[in-house]
Image (cartoon, rainbow, N blue to C red; front, top):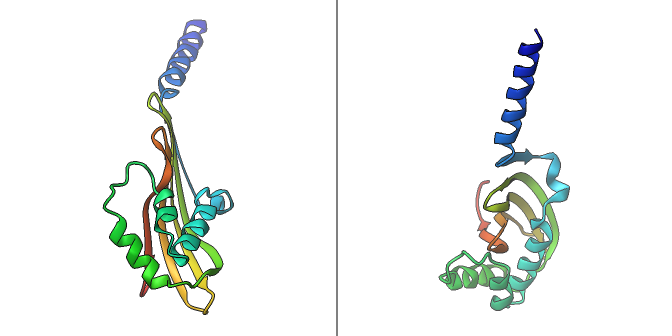
Length: 146
């Protein structure tokens, strides 16, 4: 009986050692208050409203290609000086991973944004924090039915 207990504990210890190398966790819903992306979304909207494309590009993740100039110009033209009066998180999915390559945190967040003229728009954003840096890998202004 002692041998079975020792063998069981040894296997449990080995299982713990093997799973400690890559820890992955998904969180949804309740973590809306802890989203790193929310203040960055507000900064991005302010930069787009003021037509500061360089400030908007500075909020992008380093892995995002430099071909974002047209997209930023289109979003800036649509917002056209209207500022965000309210930003509300409508859905969130946070994925964290820790492994031999470092820590990674990816937030996929949906927002309802009310502009100063009363127009509601929706933002879908992916905010990534990893060893390369932090920033948006996707930032979309969604028009239409959501």
